[in-house]
Image 1: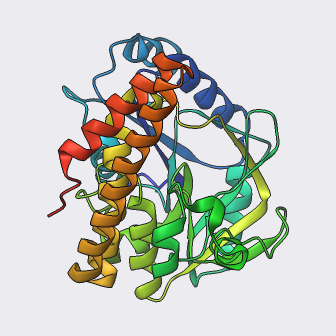
Image 2: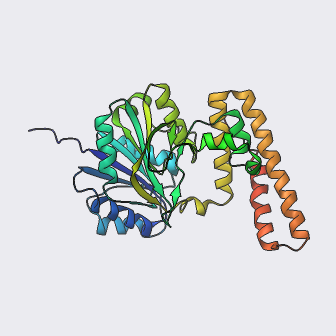
Image 3: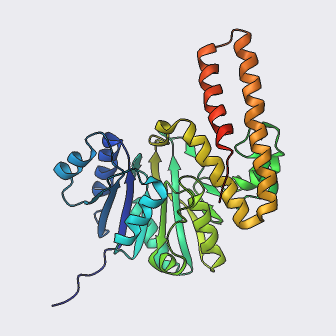
Length: 313
């Protein structure tokens, strides 16, 4: 009796309350990857919609791992990685759609370039415009400008470097990291550096993974000819203040891990000041009669962030 051969790709999807989007995602995978041997693993984080029944009814070939609680993006992907048998593992968000032979193109590139450990496709928004998903590693300057209210005042060269604006969208290029909404990795990378760091609940975990892969000597590539659609943030939209808290705590965790505790303390104080300042701005706008319901909602969210203290272990 012979062992069952490994599939080319294990597609790992962590899903939470996005049944309709997940159905479209799964359809696109099977319809557009006829020449790639696949196993598809869906890790469901205790969805309250009809995700489980939809997968069982319409996609019986899918390996479904139903969790009894919301395990989050990072833990969910690690559950899928432990189950995966493929030569390559493909972390994919449920709110994505595979276009053409995107998966096959990534497999072919990795087959031809054994030094490349991680690859990411050209990602499009719902309206088919370009979505920025390739990056260089963040610097100290990036910490204070990118994804803060000071971003509009950032030096142009700082953000252009971070967002890799110097290469065309359809190019193939070495980068430092690619977004986890669609990230394919060589099995050997996973076996060497392990799974995602579960101290990141959500956000920044793929940056950390790519950083560890690069430190281990693997290349990371953006493949502009391989295209997918990413509708974007449909699970995290449900998270409210937790989205802000998880993002900022993950940011602080990354900088503490790779830049040291002292810098992380300084950055934490800066971020808390940012939220306190925004509470003041929103309060002033509310007093002046501008969209008071919206202002109250934002103040409530920012206050929850302040109360959390953005503490990281």
